[in-house]
Image (cartoon, rainbow, N blue to C red; front, top):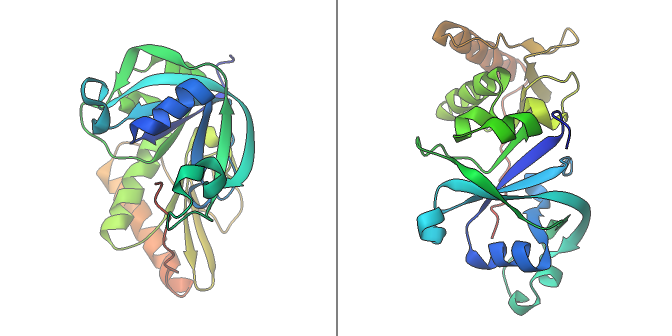
Length: 228
């Protein structure tokens, strides 16, 4: 692996999903949670409280060998009557799972659905916070501040390389377009984010985004599908 290779950390909540990853070498992600696709060389797994002594840590990872888009009923034929049986999922094809030793723990119980990071940060990390760059930390704080204001935003991590400028981004879909704020802004219509650990800087960014949302006619609210 190369230091800059991308690592996608996903959460496994059910034992059967870990068993699928271990024995059948695949993992599923709802298409709605990754509308731009899956762009990572490595997939890592954070285990939830269903795993008792392994709860709250990243204990496994694997190289991603491929990806295909399939319906849930084809992934889990025994659950063909599930409410989301026709939902589309990315089926990530994996190599053999490796143990992360020591595991990456979550002592602050930080909540997340997915994290993009880089291979070098993943290898060095001991806690979840170590996976984030300074830009990611800042964007995460802005995201939660907007959430407290009732704004549904999208975070784009610096390591995901899905942004237009290579920075960590906040995006809010509005009635009259999309508001974009970035730690590496390019273009006059992108709100610059100064990624420093300063409450004043964070609130300046939040205020600028809220004003831009107002100028764009307010946010469009869309439900985000939950993995099941």
